[in-house]
Image 1 (cartoon, rainbow, N blue to C red):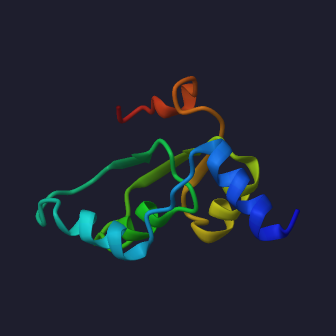
Image 2: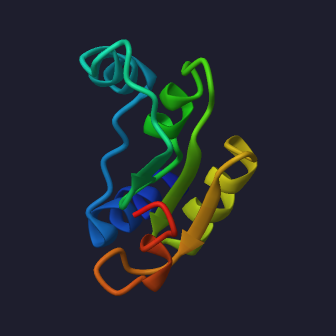
Length: 101
């Protein structure tokens, strides 16, 4: 099995589709401009595209991402070092509840 085939099967197994920076930036641009964000959670963070867009805020909020795929979670941690990335199931992760809500 080639590496490309392995990667395709791996992504299919985890249902992975990474949004990409362009989509993440577009979605973030739709949010109110004068809103101050204290906490941002991405429950299926992948490689961190959405959290990367959040860094455009004037004051970067507490950022938390949850990723079930251990390899991808490690990649995200390196890509977005100012976020807390949890390797786990977003439906069962107690770290999603913060003091801020």
